[in-house]
Image (cartoon, rainbow, N blue to C red):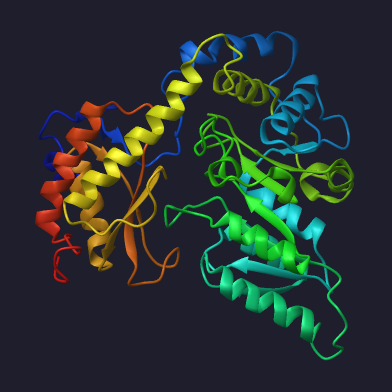
Length: 402
């Protein structure tokens, strides 16, 4: 409206798109640009990506099971398999669909899925579609997980008491609304003890965790061979789109035949495949530079600095150090829009989260830090957030009244 346009005309962040359309030039604190490939694309990935269009189309216009596989698809799958330490891999054109279509292809009626209570909605959708029985264990509580597995093995299926055909435990590397990483070492230990399969969703952890960016297994010291199925996405750390599912060759070959993402969905664009390849080469140092190593180090340093400063302000910050996701609790639902608008006025683009994504009294703002952020940018953002914390009474770590 005209009144809002006038209000936002103040300050250095105001600009005009066209006519009376007003926009803000903001510091991005909400996107999953963990390793900063969206910022330095022209110097890190541009040449390879543009060259890929010389010999291949923008779209394969077909599913992977028909004529939708190019040499770049095979190259991406081989690269991902080698990077994460699995025998085989299949790439999918959408991260959400990687879980939503793979889980129903793996599990069916007579199987049991044991899922962390805070797993992503793509996992929830996939589990429900599969027709399997579902049990949830308390977040990151491996003792509760063990209780559920023990009861499932002893009691079997409802009514018939026949043994479950198979049991699969699903966890995430980093939980996207909590900023916490998985207690993977103990999850694997419990699953080995009871013969359950482990499915690890590394959408937010691949590229962002571990000394070389190899995700939750590297960070927690777990052998990738002990994780039966590893899933991840290319949207967060690699500046691309889509996802992958990795495991042993027999498993992946079966998924290629059964999974809807392989049989029916359009395959990943060759241009995006080349973006993924180029970013992996930077991360692995195959480009002849140490830019990848610098990015991983910068992400960790920026994340820990930002988390430390938010905590020092007295804000209630969820999650663990080394995680690039920082949820700051707002609690009161009326503060959701207020926090977002106050940040926008000050040139900060943030994500705020309310019901039904989280419980109604667990509203929060979620900051996602990038290797592309400079320390000066983070300091400016922290200065503005400190002012907003006073305005909206958000210092819940110091007082229950904020």
